[in-house]
Length: 382
Image 1 (cartoon, helix red, strand yellow):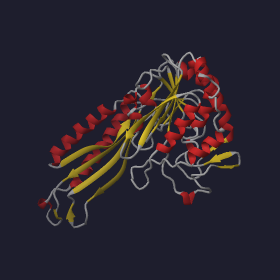
Image 2 (cartoon, rainbow, N blue to C red):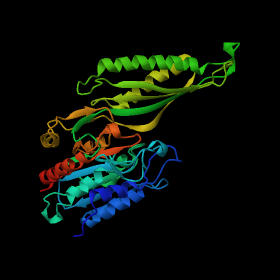
Image 3 (tube, rainbow, N blue to C red):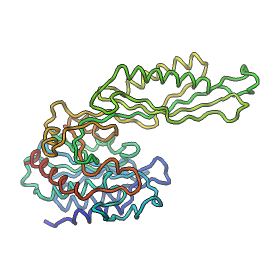
Image 4 (cartoon, rainbow, N blue to C red):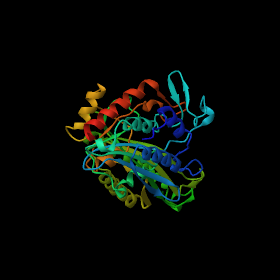
């Protein structure tokens, strides 16, 4: 069987292939080059590869590679996209892997292109005929923006595997819970008019003042009703992020718009929360005689919790020497967990290095993670 390039060579190749996902078209890239490169390496190891088009216009793709046959098995999953970057703020070219001070610098080194060479290095130790259950490598699109790749997994024919590892950068610690996130918008339409006579219009900003007060009351209600000591911030949070309205001091404000986010803890339903907010806004619209539009900025991600008494989490704790932890950032884990796959988030690198200039993966994270993945494969596939 042909051998793969080294971990360093693979990572250098992936970093050199831009795959930024952004809501702004000027920054957005296709991830197809990364998908094709991963597919080639997987095929070299004997995997059967299926590539799924997620968004034809934006050229976004998922890949599912399968080694071996049968029920169960293990999924090694990661996203192929990165956030945008500011090259002028980097000490080196973000699209060229740079080794310095026992660190590997480059956009996506830890978040999270770096996971794929480690997964492949572990997979390279196994042959299809030796596997009692299949090994899957899953690569997705647009995790950093819409999570459209993860949302498309159901139509990809997601395997009925026993376990899945999401290789986000966690400093080699197993993560068994994370918060969910909703990003929502509220648009109020009143009636503009001359400010000298309030009766000539209906001030949308006044109505938004009422909405903001109600959202702040709702935030306190959520804090009283939901609590989880596993998180450093143990309650849901609701952040009023940005507001725009009106156009001049001497005009009654005719339009006002608010964007906010709401971060949930396990056990909370995003749809139920939206229904509650919608009901409250309907009452305010009636009270203020305004039109209030409530809409999603993106579809959101549910909170995640591993299966109770998870075999995978116990194994991850044993291998790493760390107890499982909860984090505030969201991942694609809920989409696999919803398919009844025992799921944990665990990978090399630190989230502290992600989404900022001079992103890096430390050398001393690489070999341990490869070793852990090998042990996961032996447990679930041999």
